Amino acid sequence: MEATASKEAKPESSGASTEVIVQTNNLSKTYRDFWGRSKVRALNSLDLEVRRGEIFGLLGPNGSGKSTTIKLLLGLLFPTSGQALVFGKEAGDVSKNEKIGYLPEESYLYKFLNAEETLDFYGRLFDMSAEQRKRRVAELISMVKLDWAKRRQLKEYSKGMTRRIGLAQALINDPELIVLDEPTTGLDPIGVREMKDLIIDLREQGKTVLMCSHLLADVQDVCDRIAILHQGELKEMGRVDQLLKVQDVTQIRANKLSREAEEEIRAVIERHGGDLVSMDNPTTTLEELFLSIVNESDERPGLSPASRAGKSSGASGSSGASDSAN
Image (tube, rainbow, N blue to C red; front, side, top):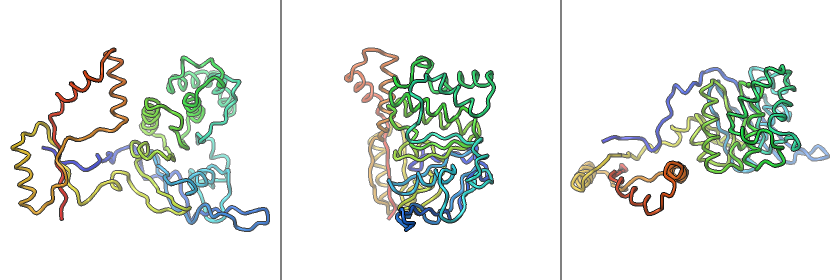
């Protein structure tokens, strides 16, 4: 029998160090109207740190200040007050951008170019040699799995394919910090999983990733730490596993429990003053189910829903028990 938390903790040795790559101190931004009057306070006294080698997530509803924060860090906007530092330099110092890759929510690409020409163009902007560009372009196109469409004009690309080439463009200069704004927009479930795997691979390479997304499941899957913004203010910040852990609930998972064993567990919980919340079979996620079905279909063409149902019922010998202390 195995006792587990409600979500498995990510290992502390995820590659992150104590070196701070991004730092904001009392960072604020107020948008003004034509007459210079305060119109919208988009960001209010933001203090946060992003460390080298971690995936850091910015969360919040529309209008919470996520995009404003990213634009301030990239030097696309100037703060009303406070300070933003990237690699120890003021965010307005454009020299820092050589170490940054940026994927905006809407990629701005030349539609008449193909994938190879697009990446070659951006490589030229970083003064990469012809040999470097050729090697890097081939690596990135393979990484985002667009080899089969590398000579098609981007105007023929789907939104998901455009998202992939946008990520490749953001990585052309082999940046140390990658800023991703809604990276899974327009991707199908398989593409979403592949994108998340790519983001995790970037961390394994020692890269630092700052991302924002409306899809909370994506953030939960890949981020080490998160900051939650609302109405321009920081409301919560910390490690994902620690924030999601429900302290007053204990979850017990076991395989092939007999009915008698389940009754004994119920009796033990009651004897120790606990309240049994549930005891049933655990569920998977929709993403895991979808990917499992697709993979099985590739391996066993013609597999029917009835066959899957029979296989699932035969394999469901596990039980889960949860108790909540009074």
